[in-house]
Length: 332
Image 1 (cartoon, one colour):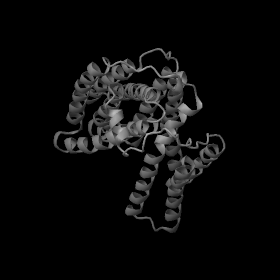
Image 2: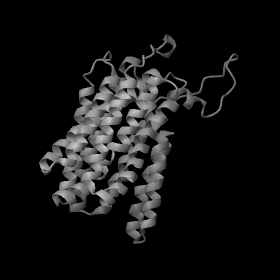
Image 3: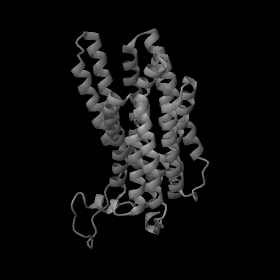
Image 4: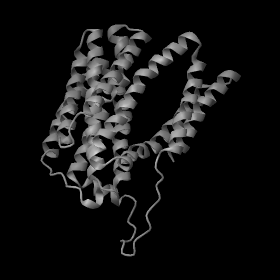
């Protein structure tokens, strides 16, 4: 499945190259291709995340997810840098050529290395198949899983717009250029890389809920400071701290979900996590965009940050009181 969806995504930048060569590119075509990338990404990301428990021991899931986050944030640093060099030297078409070619090694690895999963045969004493959403209801009824999802959702809706509206903030508040925006994106990615690397040194016995909630609250506070900050260099430092906080918070929550959900609910749990994280960012961008129109980017981000801190504190007070289940031997 991963190789299939990555192949579809590879065809999108390849199609843009063809459209640029023939001179037939239109805005609606780019929108359609972007939708295709978004849909295939949404369908493949739960599979990406579910790979980790299948290739590492349960006590190494947190480190595995942190390592996965490391490569993701590294791409945030290298991507804008490489794209900037290519656009300034050989043009935008080269960016899409490199983008299409970059899928080939990963597709090869997916076909060669990733484990093949085959569904187990049904047991004679297995209960009848339940409704599609029965598993989702079961997940949301468990406080430790519900708390992780709520924390990730709140961060996505309220704090995710920080990076989305960084170009607006850079231009409106600091009168910056594309180079300033690239520096901001790289700072956020560098912070995420440092946060993921730091998680690799955290012992498995450390309660990931405290890590997730603590850094989610820090992320909201950073958003408040970014809205009030008058210096561009200060924005770069705050974006680095925001990248680290978001990575630690979301990865810690993800490790809780994958360790404690059990094999039968793992797929739906990871799907809900991706929905909370990426769907939250999309919803937050829409709502914050409306707020920016009426209040300005600084005031909109300030309100988001204050709301994020309040909500994360409320979620943490309930979440941290819920006992974490001990995985049964069958789940090891």
